[in-house]
Length: 277
Image (cartoon, rainbow, N blue to C red; front, side, top):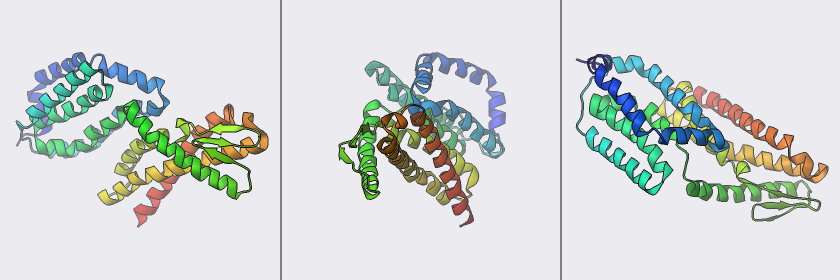
């Protein structure tokens, strides 16, 4: 029975040609995506995603060595469909379609070359690569706006409960002395996307069952929302008692890092709880 290593040695020349071929096909797509990772703080975690996916493969290598190879022709339509997505994306200048086609193409190549059982083993690292693909802005805005409104409503409720005079207009929080806007950065979506990617990786290494892994990943959603809610509430207190300047500048930047650090601490704490359960 052949294993992955045997097939890679046998087809070394084909694999050697495949890598530069993929590099040519995606010569503009991948660098452009990496440029967005660099320019857009919402997707700065994209640089880590391929590295984490590679580590997943490293961890699964002993299992891959013993997984039977049964090449499947079903991989061919997946490959063709993925290339079609790329062509459609280029024709319509739709970046999400172009970029995600690479992930589906890799899945199709693995299925065609090595078979369904190998693809099942590699499903996590290949699927994890989707976290590196930025969402379309229309989808991002559609998700961020209701989150901003929700966080604004709850934050204003808490501020009023503490005796602070405040009122709300949409995602605008108004104090007697100043006005604050709950922007996209405070919606929780930015930290949610990064936290989801990290929670998947952390769940894989820290939990033994799929149920506990799923619970840990899902916990990233309320954790991201709650921590960003605390950020808005604290910002409101500072704006009320120390003026708008105290809530901006250094504090605003520091708060972003502190919120994400707090979210990671909560994620690790919840992981420890469910691991013992």
